[in-house]
Image (tube, rainbow, N blue to C red; front, side, top):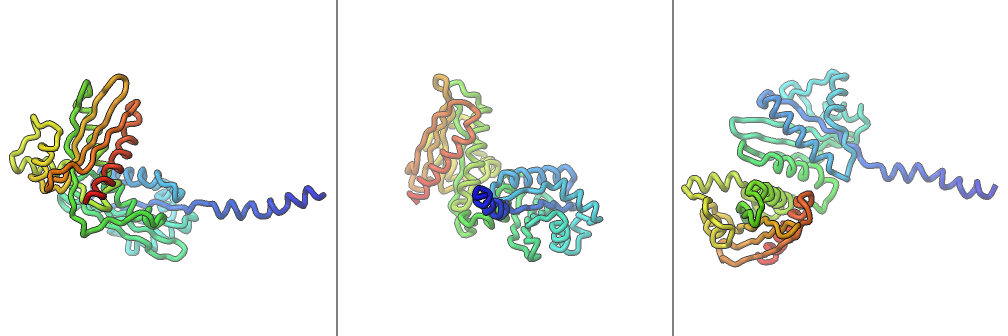
Length: 307
């Protein structure tokens, strides 16, 4: 009998503990627009959902399930026909037992694309965050989508995320990494993209990250060719002056023995001083992206300490 008495409090309080640990539920509701093609919208919606699915802060209700409910409720998800987006999102959120609804809009105006995200508190019918980012056809849309998810959602659940500062114009740009010692040039370019993505994710709250396509466009306007340039501080400073960057990041990707090595250096364009230098050994290609994340975070800290 005593054994059952001891077990009884555990059984009583267990549902309370389980309930307390339940992750909040977010329903993702993409709204359609006549200004975007079906393929363009599909790409952006998938990008948005992929970034949302990475979070540990909440349980994601995917857009297919949300749209199925919207169809059952005879709700029109086209922006031109939705008079009150908040009320529409609220109705769907209540039906799905969702705590929040994130509804996004993608609007094209010529070469420009506007991405808007709104986070709605279903219970209180309150818009918690609203973020709008302007992009264009030359912009890395993956990074733009990632940033708007961070700004509109992650920053609400985790206050340690810093919002980007509009007044900070310190520009950072990356040169194409140099392929060395048997590494194919295409592989080095892929690692360069990893570096840019990491710069945007970890540095956009403190610096202006200059897009690679914008870099190439500015250099083309000055009839400046990257052909024949080596990845060193002199070349980086020369390019940095052309594109008006404050810091340039350059480096190399090489094989030595059975391992890969990634080297990244940062140079202050104005003072010509090297602000940081770091190298990482990578045992296999599957670990390259995570190694780049580590290198970029460390390099940004070096730049931040020296600025």
